[in-house]
Image (cartoon, rainbow, N blue to C red; front, side):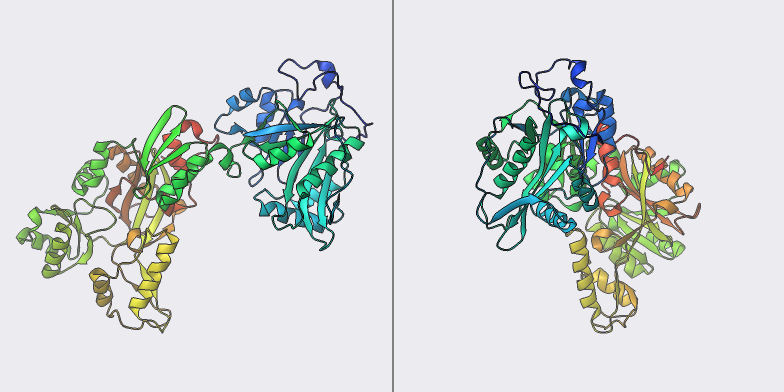
Length: 593
């Protein structure tokens, strides 16, 4: 920003200004006294004056340095379509109109609304009130320290509207003097952050603020005052037309950030129908300007479109996963055979023929001591019984698994932690230990009450995707621990109420990505490669997440829940896989293979 004092400047009214003329090379004599590469800190983001930059790459570099939580705006960019074309996944043209009020034709209003005083901000606390009003109408609030520092310069004008009856601040607006900011040869100014308290009882607050700011700049001899307004804001457009504003050819360019997301990627109404595992992907896609069409919300299915590319997904399962890879994950017997051949440690297993327990099954049980019984095909922990040690118990477990799938698998019960490793596009993105549902006694409630309360908490936390069933399995686990469901659990005592750590049956998850051993990481990557699958959750039993041996492969999931691993960048990596051109520059994988 310029620190020199400039005389009043009136733009040359006999010719178009730099910011309003049709495209043509701007004569250098018009730029001679204008400062270059100018941006000003507005507190809520930076205002980038595009016409002051030597080239478009300079503007791009500035916009890329935008701070998190702020909204930078580039106004008057030369050749905005070319600027956006330099980084189409990062920038977009704001769907707004740039309106201009020619101040040499503006007629002052002499009578303000009754009961309203429009004046300059006089205290720092009034900027806090201005932020409150901005927040109440969904606008980005500003850093009060920056606003207060700006207010003490003539480059910025901060006005507030005050209800003279109550003394309350009911409106705010900010003005920027372009002549003082960068020696604008056009003699321009601009209006920003106009906001009116929705609870104000006085009509015409926004008009009064706009008129007062226009009169201030008219008195300084400025040629015009510009503003940017959404094309959909019909009420504001009607007001500005009434005041004498006219459309200009100028546009604004912004970054594709979460604040601007509604402007470049409208949210589909049906996004609320998605479960957390699909929604995390939809949100990431929308942040990048990828169109989201929810084709079946209950199923978690949606179609993502960017440019000429479309991908159909169901949560983390996409068209990029082949039917063969999916079938390999679906049948645990096939998965085991493939990985054994590839040298991945696999728990010893035995296939039950036609669901019948005979001598071979009993012999396997005697040899192993304790086994896990599971359907050869299934998901979400359904039909799995852990810790079977007796023949009669084996028959019951096999019957339960056989009811869900004609093919049943027995596996050696390997002690250790239940570890899920998430692999996306040949990269380990996240790893977490999963633990079975557990309740903690309070000395008052029965175990059944504690389980029901914990189940409700898990349902709320996961959008209904996780709960603890009050079924025979839960009762059996509690009974095996020496309790009954109507027992009162002593205060502070922990009781595991499910055998498996499946998240759908109330299990919990603890991130351990940074502690994962290289051997387990390599085994997870090798498993995904052998299966030939781009996205998978590889499950292991490990003595410790940092151990290089003693672990065994359990199964691979073709549709792992990405939301379970937040804040690891699971959805980001998944969308990178689907639409590589939208990946943010410089982002690297959490754990490359």
